[in-house]
Length: 130
Image (cartoon, rainbow, N blue to C red):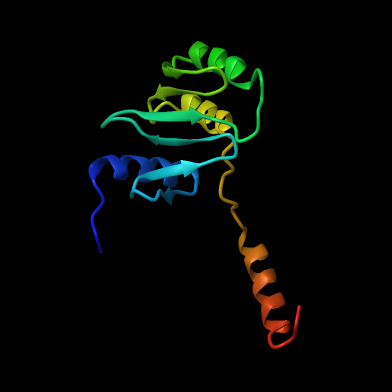
């Protein structure tokens, strides 16, 4: 198994702790994707949230930038409709705000009964077209 650099291990441990999915970019960079942006490794101690909605949202970045600045984020990129802000991954309030700003959905947790119910349904429907 190939070892990841320490910066990617920080991002992966953050994703595991927060129940988030990670993805590898074309150039091999690890990031956490969202509907309105993504979270990536900025340096050895900080993560950054990039807010860049796919569709035009006139005031989204301006409102989000103000909320993030009030919570102690450092704005490192400030554009008209998109930007980036640094945060400490160990601060739970900043982590929650970054996840919300980028529109990231958490992984679902299934209870033991839900898992058993789905396994039973799959076994019962095996061999039949759905």
